[in-house]
Image (cartoon, rainbow, N blue to C red; front, side, top):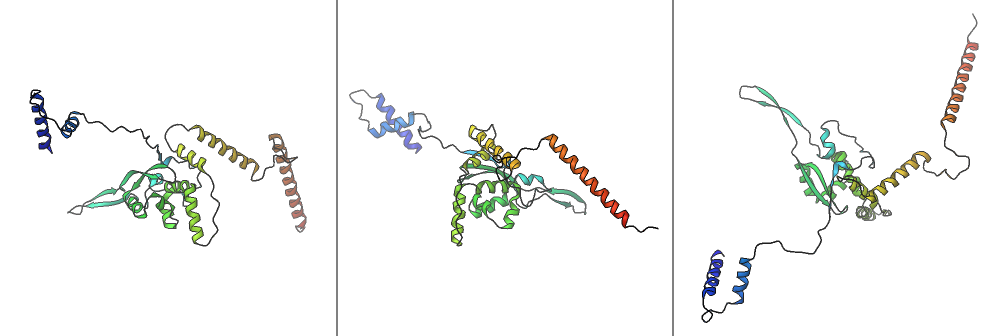
Length: 281
């Protein structure tokens, strides 16, 4: 290829030095080759917009919104609570020399940072994980299949970090349809597919560095209002009933005082009855 380019340059230079009467005819192929050689290298121009993909840090997902992990947080090697570490822990041992001298040492898990694109969420999940877990993810066919496996051993292997990602993934409509297909295959009726995109977008926005978007702020206010309403009023709405009012501090003190007086009277009555039953000496 280098010989052809040098030969093309020599031919073009000789053609440019020839007089008009003797100048040979230059073929379009040589003209195109000279243009390519002389033109500087540049990136191809394209009007297609780049697909916007959000990169989410898994350890920043809102744990208050997600149900608690059934096995609880790990007390040993707490770093594993913020990633996919599987059953990996810090191991301790000794280096034994030739004369029998022992030197204490540790073996730490082989931890790396990897980002996975999750189609059901439309985002890239960035998390810490060990090479053994990465090998399992490749064998399962992706991060979604690894997280959605429901065996107890897999749930225990996920840890709190994997549990948060699993719950968020199960809120998507694609995964709900996938579970419905499995239910139908087992002869069970499918469940209604719920639209939880606002909650998913809020969790993804919360786990992304930077301020929340306007849509996420509206979702957060709606969640706070629903939680406050369920905390004060319970499942039923008593606001429209007559005679149901919030208990004030003064009324609370008065009722507690009445309760104390009632308890004291009952205790005195019990003591009096016990004294009457005692035999007289």
